[in-house]
Amino acid sequence: MVKKFICSENNGKYYIDWGENTLVDALAYHRHRTPDHEVYKFLGDGENETDSTTFSQLQDFSFRLGAWLKRVLRSGSRVILLYDSSLDYIRGIMGCMTAGMVPVSGVYPRSYNVLERFAHVQKDSQAVAVIGPKVILSEFQKHFTGEMLGAGFLWIPTDVIPATYTLVTPLGLLVDPEVYCIRAISSFFRSGVTSV
Image (tube, rainbow, N blue to C red; front, side, top):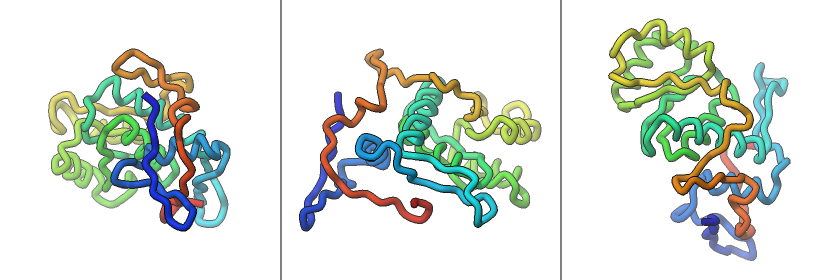
């Protein structure tokens, strides 16, 4: 089924109806409308751009991560994001939302008392998995043995997902990001703090 965007008109401009649509829908629409538009830039040292992403790149990664997560987790599962300051954090949020998971924030890998904080966030949120770069997950995993985080807790590296990994729907249909939003109607959406 092709997603139809529910929009409202105000002075000749269309706006996404947030009662009916999600950020995942907005990303799909903008990928369809302006795929090569640079939506986020990351200034690694506060002045110089070290990473950027377009609507197309962000949705492609979101689909791959979403498919990767759906392979091992149930819809609605809570997933901790464990990233350094980077656009990978935004990619992780969108991947979780694309998969129907709940992204859980609150742990910065380089902060004081981070292992204790991680354990508290996991317990309070009842997260069943954590995503992040393999090197960070490996370092954290050394400190949590056995069932300290609950039976079956998963450590899912997001930097090893194959570039060709594809989302398969429950009906067995491959989802092509280009086709996802064919029936989109014109709207205007601008993200908040970190958008360009």
